Image (cartoon, rainbow, N blue to C red; front, top):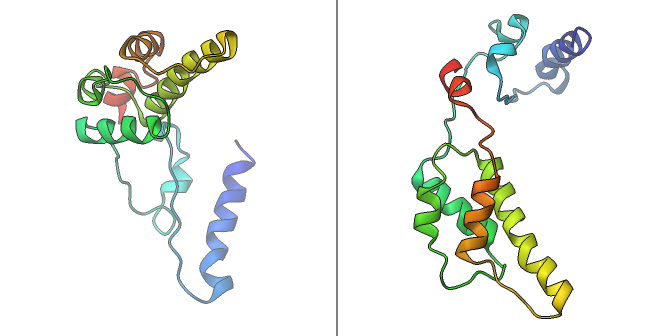
Length: 141
């Protein structure tokens, strides 16, 4: 890290001078408390925007997107699934949808018939997928 921060700062300092036009430089982290104070000085990353974990409508849309074009059984209730994902990050939701999709795929390879992602498969995936953001992480921000 000791070599990375000076390199980033050097690159940031030269952006607006090289091109002759202003640009917007954005960075993202899930551990803001570990940022080097030099990065946060005025003229570098001036504004800090906290983006919370997804709310219910966002989780619902993510589930819809991540399960699109996949064989989803009629017993899957996207609203109930999204409600049960409170505290999960967007990456967690993507992972559990991908994980759930592997179950019918592997079964179809094994027995030669197409399967579907059922409510039970999704429930098992949720049960087996730990939240990557702890309560302590959320409070630290």
